Image (cartoon, rainbow, N blue to C red):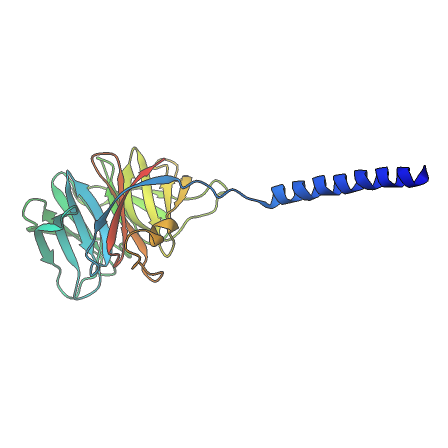
Amino acid sequence: MKFINYIFLSIIVISLYACNDNNSNTDTIETPPEPEYTLKNIYSHNASYFTQGFEFVGDTLIEGTGKNYSSKLIKYNCTNEDIYAQISLDNIYFGEGITVFDSVIYQLTYTSGKCFKYSLDSLKLLGEFSYSGEGWGLTHDDQHIIMSNGSSILSFRDPINFNIIKQVSVKDSNDYSISYLNELEYVNDKIYANIWQSDDIVIIDPETGIVEKRINLSDLRSAGDGTIYSSNVLNGIALHPNGNIFITGKYWPNIFEIKIK
């Protein structure tokens, strides 16, 4: 009888152990999070472009590139790489962010304290503004030119004289400042910003400066033709009229059309 009881108890112990072991395995298996975007299309991108500014006007992509001796402003069709017009900046200038406001292209410079204005149609130089500090990214909200300078501060400037109207400090929900704001894009009443030296885009409330969402795009590095290396920085956000976002980086050989979920 004791022997039978012993067998019975052994069976119960083994069963409990198996159940606990199964539960343990279940607890340690993590389902990978779903991407926060859908990849719609991949286009070729000139891998010699050190991308600093990226914006659509209709189906025409306006791109500003950087580096002394090679900074440019280009208008082209990204679906077939047809170039409509381009100009080179003087060798002393390191081109930075761009935006298009009332048929005028604004282009920052990195450390020269100048913002150039060009005609959208001809790329003819129309004038320039001066500002203090560094120039990084540009976008606009139909009233202001919005500028980043590498810090956590976004400056809202008058498009007529480039004077600062207001400034917003960008922070996360824990009140931690978010610096290295780089290329900018205004999307559905929010500001999208690349974070320098990361694969993240943050979505910012322009009134409060609070980061409402952070999207990681590191998966794009394994998409396309596989020639995007880790040393090349994600930098380039452009809203297409179809509502999708076009993404690229410095010296990237591809442009990725994505839809944010």
